[in-house]
Image (cartoon, rainbow, N blue to C red; front, side, top):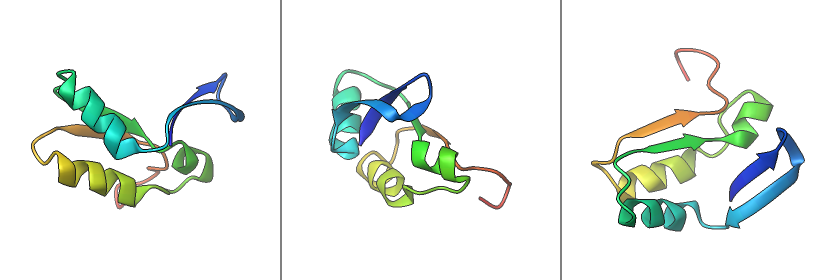
Length: 77
């Protein structure tokens, strides 16, 4: 899902979309030249959780730079 957390609380979120790839398409169609994605579940868990979603977005837009955060705790990740 594409969400915004209120004061960083997972239990207090606003859902903007259930389809992250479609949301990425919206921003690309609006003229986005790059995306900043945060795996919020990964940020809370300490390891990436939504790798497949990120890969799906990257596959759909192979020339679009993507910055990723959430769950990245070491260079191997």
